[in-house]
Structure formats: structure tokens, C-alpha cells
Image (cartoon, rainbow, N blue to C red; front, side, top):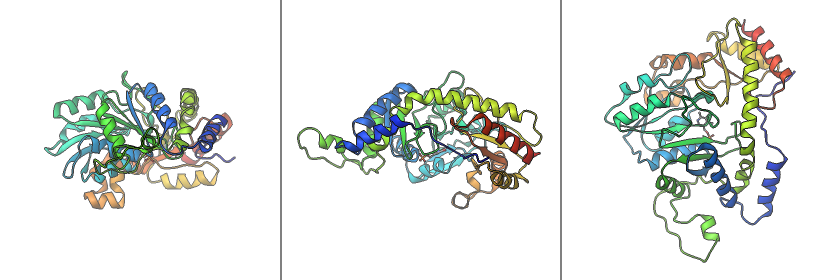
Length: 372
Ligand SMILES: *Cc1c(COP(=O)(O)O)cnc(C)c1O
């Protein structure tokens, strides 16, 4: 049996929506993106959504709109994808790592206050694998020290913890619609803001700092546009937004299937020697299903699984150990021992709504056999 690592859940309706855009006059950011923004705002409960070309762009713009400047520091996690840190560096600021909780892999809120310095401006937590960080605890630290919070919600649309949803207790939540994410258009992202002015600023910075975007220039009478700030090019075109508008209506149904798959995996791995499951507090979005195995055997297990038809990945090796960030920030692996250990133990298994029960059982049987 072959089990692919990921298959999307796009359907004929989504494809038809793309064709409609292609047959219309307007291909870039326009009415379809605006419709998605309104629907996504309703879904997340966050009032001002700006659709963008990636979560990386979303986080970069969120930090800029919040005034992050060269020399500033942002507290974040080493157990994540590199974008969580590089967007801080794009602003000329420095990512300051705090180690993760040993049983969840999430930023350890209890250690954040000790990392605050006079240069600290904000906290950038990641809801790893779809399980939320302790946002109440992080919000309390942020409040006490006058810091902003921007959430990396690339794994985290459908989740909650202690009655808190992504973006509820922060300035901005940044989402990814990359090819393998729970909601996808190949490449895409969004920022959800509480503040209308910050949303407007990030929208302008996503379009070269121009006072009018293409849709604004196309509709109505001709007016000159101005350049009012140094901006970037991070807008989402309507071709890709067309894949999101109706897919969003199916997200909760797809999430229910993810929940079933995780329950079947969990039952299959219960009591298996050599396999540890990270604890997932609250209601997880179940973006990734990861196992922690003996670091000494992790790579051999990965290769063996691949050989037996089970596609696997690693999310993630601790990013402070990757050459560039290690050298740029002057870190050694042992600086954040929990993240380093998790990064050397992790295996990600296939998790997507189209997995069949037969495939899940094959993955369980194969992993149990290889890891024992
Ligand atoms: C995918 C991902 C990103 C980057 O998202 P893009 O849309 O590809 O820019 C950022 N953070 C995490 C945790 C991710 O998994």
C-alpha cells in the first residue's frame, strides 16, 4: 500500500469558481477576494480580514503595521517553520527564543516574562500542529509589559482553548492557505485584525504602499494614485481566492473527519512501545499528526516508513539549530533543550480528510512495527 503525505479536498465547485474568474475580466484582487474576506471574518469572529499571498507576508505586514523597527526584539518559539522568525528579521528586528513545553511543544508561557528586555515589543506564538498556546497566560504577560501579540495561525483555524479562539486575545492572527494547510489555494494567507486602521494600513502595505489598488483603479472614474509608504507585493489574486470562498463552507465538515482520523490513530498507537504523542490542549485544529520517537532511531524510522509506502515528514527540526539562524543569532542546539529534543524526535504522519480507514490502519501497523 502507498499512503501519500497529503491530498487536498478541493472539489468541482472550487474548480468552477476558478474557471468563472478566468472567464471574467478581472484576475487580480477584486470581488472574489473581498467575498472571501467577509466570509473568513464571519468564520473567525475577527472583524477585519486582509487576504494575502502567504502567511509569511501576513506576519511581515502585521509586524510592520504594529510599528516593529530595527533593533526591536520579538519573543517567539524555536519549534516552528522558519517563516515565524524570518518575518521578524525582515523588519530588522531580532527573534528572541523561549523554549517550549516538554509535553506539548508549544511556547512555554511561564518562561516568556524572563525573556523580556527593554527592546522587546511583542510576542509571536505558534499554535503548533493545531493545538493552541495558552493565550490567556501570554496575554497576561503582554499586558503587564506593554507588548503586542501576533499569532502564527498557519496550523490553527478550527481550534480553541479555554474558550479562546485564535486572534481573540491578540492584535492580529495570521493564517496560511499553502498547499498542505487545512484550507488551501496553493499559496495564500490572511491577517485578521481587531483594528480597522491597522487592517487598512496592512492592505496598503500589501500593495506597494499605493493609495489605490487595481480594483480601485479599474472601477469608477480615473483618478491619480499616490505612493504614500514603502510597501511590498503581498496581495491575493481572485484566481486563488476562488478556491477558498466555498471551500470555507466545508471546513468544519473536513475538520470533523480529521478528528475521526486522529481518534483512530490515537487508539492504534495507545500503549505502543517507543511512541510518544504530544499532548494537545483544548480543541485542536488537527493540522499535523506527529509522533515523538527515540532521537537516536528517528532518521532510520523515517527511511524505513518511506520504504514501506508511508510518506512522512518532520515538523520541525528546532529552527535555532538550522545553519543560517544558528549563525545569525549565535545559538547552540542546547540553548533550547526541549525544542532541540523534540526536533530530533519528531515524525509527522499523513493526516487529511481523504485518508481511508484502511490507509490509517496500514500506517498504524507499519509505524508500530518499525518503531518497536
Ligand atoms: C506554513 C507555515 C508558515 C508559512 O506559511 P506560508 O503561507 O507558506 O507563508 C508559517 N508558519 C507555520 C507554522 C507554517 O506551518
